Image (cartoon, rainbow, N blue to C red; front, side, top):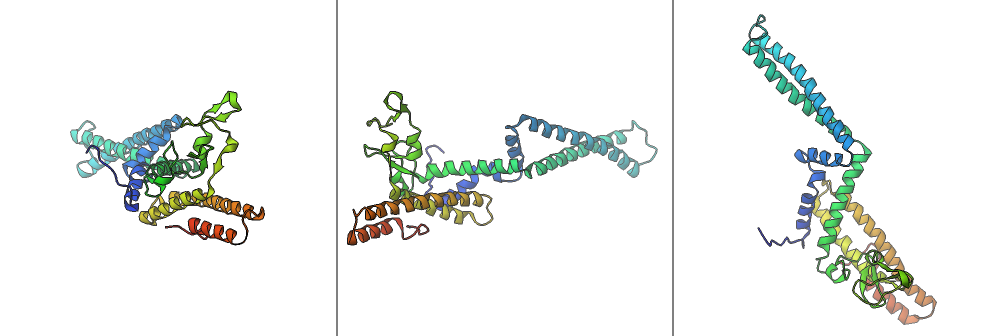
Length: 294
């Protein structure tokens, strides 16, 4: 089907696609074997060891199977069959094929079993799952009805750390800090939208907007986790992402509240004005770090 549009507005549809894009790293069967083949691309020597193990298992199994085939023919037919008898040859061939296949499969399974219990493999698999999910989430959360209003002006992804430039343009902080610098202007940042260049010190973090963005991301992640279910191998990765978002929310929330407190201590906000500002903050950002807004 061409020009098909995949609806990612529901947690159910997102959870289904989470499983699809991570199947190589989480499913069993053929995907499990393919996963190990991909893993070995990072270390060609390991692939050689795996192939050698399978071949050795196949050879050993074939030899054992050949002997078993001879014994089976002698048992079911006659002890005095000649060595070149057709029945004897067929028995050896069938035994060698079955034994070789079994030996190769057993060696492959043993190799996979041992590799999967190494920290290196476990860390690699979790990293791949996490990376795939983060890319998918970043891309599809940007289309969320709320997050779409809080996307970086250039990357078009939700701003986890909203940064406002002197020109009033919002970018994600990580994105704007990685923009090219103007060498002959004290390494000022070259604005990607052709606004005036600016110093890194001139960037203002919008902490309250950061709370809104990240609480929405957490809300969507929690909905996705609920759809995956308790037995999903992807649950741990999404829970880890929720934990990371919680840290960002905490930093934004406390920083935003501190901005108000600084104004109070400087007596820029006094009496009812301070209480009004604090009430507005709680209404927009939630009464606590844990409180969801939706």
